[in-house]
Amino acid sequence: MKTTVIVPVYNRPDTLPLAVRSLLAHGAAVDLDILIVDDGSTDETPDVIAGLIAEHDGIRSVRRENGGVAAARNTGLAHLLPETEIVTFLDSDDVMAAERFDHDLVTLRDRPEIEITYGDMVVTDRIDPDTLVPPTDAVTRRVTSVHLSCALMRRGLVERIGLFDETLVQAEDTDYILRVFESRTRFVQTTTLSHYYLRHPGNMTKNTDAMTRYFARAVLLSLQRRRADASLVLDKPSFAIELPRELI
Amino acid sequence: MGMGFQVSGPDVVYESFGGDLVVLNLATGQYFGLNPSGAELWTAITEGHRPRELGATPEESQMAEAFAAELQALGLIVPSEAAVPATRQPIAISEPPSIEVYDDLSDLIVADPIHDTDAEAGWPKMPENVG
Image (tube, rainbow over all chains, first blue to last red; front, top):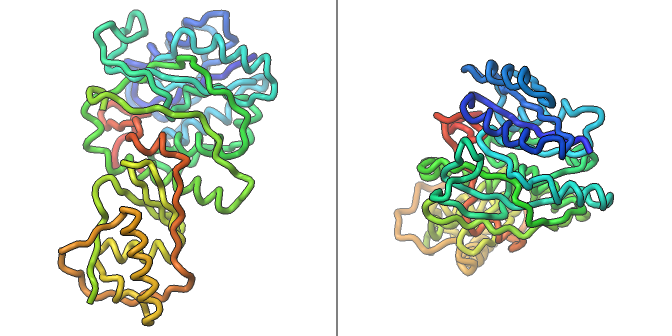
């Protein structure tokens, strides 16, 4: 099952190779199509992308004018291969877990009625660049949260849900995931560890107001959709997202 | 003259879009959907205007007072000692204000969403003030 992983990137030459390496580590076990979307990077990121493509098979890229992460994800969705069956995303500073595809792709292969699997993630303050996992003394917490990398989506679902809302500066992923789980999507919540999410300590406080506001906007948009169309019913995974203080 | 109100605390946040308004209680995980009349009254009430003085007619002001009492009972606003702001235009309440209570996203709302932002580090941690 050809699986396209959309990796949007903007000015992240240092972490992008780690993200891509965490995908390449799956080797031939998964029929991966790594699609890097360069959102108009202004640093050496384009050179890093060219180097990755030259060194490895299964990687391609598309460059666009800078438009933000939602627009970049949409560019990725517009460039799926004709043979793409499964779609997921990986942020350019995160790392896919070693067991990410093992069970969930089997579920999608064996159960054609299932449109999406949804797994867990680990939030951490550090990722070892050699082992691609958090070092033993890192602060970590396994959570079930709103994150696109937790999802393996069948192409038909992606086409049904449509594009990311580019008017949302933040919480565009929350909006997208709410749209998935309010439209009678047949899903399986799994215990798969999808990826390691690198937390940048100290960023939360200064941006809490804007973040909460856009999160509230995503909730309001969901409410408006459900009011307008009674056939929409929220049926979602059980989330557990509380973080220890060290990761907030 | 009746009392004024304010949002009950930092755990109560709200956002309006397309005439509607949603209020989130980050402590309980409940969220509340207000219709356009309710949204307009919410804005005026949380600015400190006395509900009794908000309506264009006595009946509308009574409606505003009843709506404020409902918001207070839900824990979303509390009485305020702050000075009442300057008089505003009365609100012509075209439809009764309504507020719907939901708890189907409480596991997401009760804890802060984890996505952070960082202007220095690029995105997906989106920089602030973009867009």
